Length: 111
Image 1: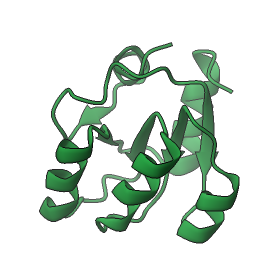
Image 2: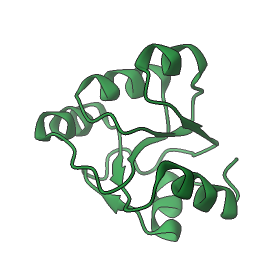
Image 3: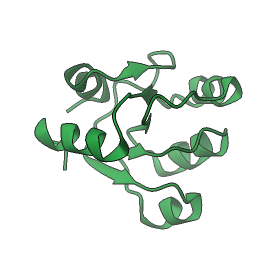
């Protein structure tokens, strides 16, 4: 499923431009420790994190993650969103908890 389709199906708010929404979404990874994500995240994962600084974009771009989803309505820093646009990484926001987002992704077939 494409990032765009998943975002629409579960009601995520796209915070960046459309450059990264055409990627394939193949899994889900929930973690807030960047070094752990670097070691265990997989290409195509939707990464759910409460981190909002620009380093999350570097990690997502390096691993070719599907997108970044920030839960609980947490505001994302403008510098982060600019960098995400430059790197073609879609950043979404959800009012749901990280667990709630993961449940919704599972419901639509992303495991």
